[in-house]
Image (cartoon, rainbow, N blue to C red; front, side, top):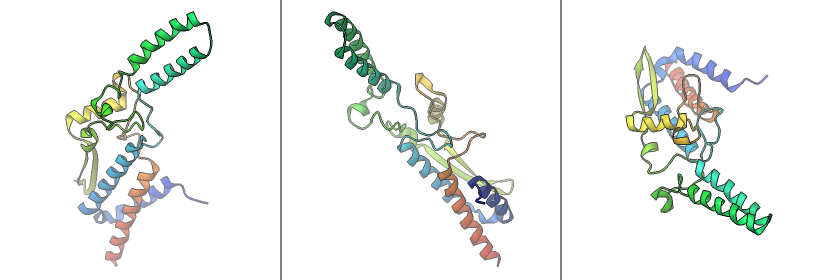
Length: 204
């Protein structure tokens, strides 16, 4: 009977506790760096690194615009000319309003540096490049912290999680009740397993 990834992870973690010295500053930093890069890779594709969240919902303006364009096509294909003229006029106003929404309103979009898809949370780059990590010992064991430690950027992360300004929720930092997706957890397992193997070899 095959073991679930979660069970393997728990077993490995329990085993690792026997070799706490195996996870030194270098190993912890390697794990933190790997997790950070994986996170950025998923986000760049419009996917949350949190298990169960999946692809980020699209931006509100592009979604509205697509619906309006579909309505315009339907109005042109049916109905009387007089009625359609009034309907098309109202739809044209809505279309104009939607095209002023995010991300269409940004200079980055106008320059071709920002696209409506994928929803990768990248505009100027300041937000995602501020994602960083720290490592250190606490309670005799190595600890790793990954997140947005700049207060201004942390507010943006909170906005993505809570859905600020009418946008959909797009969380990227796991809460205590959440965890990274399986790909990231397997990366961590691989590095921990390698650390244990080296520690076991040194122990003879």
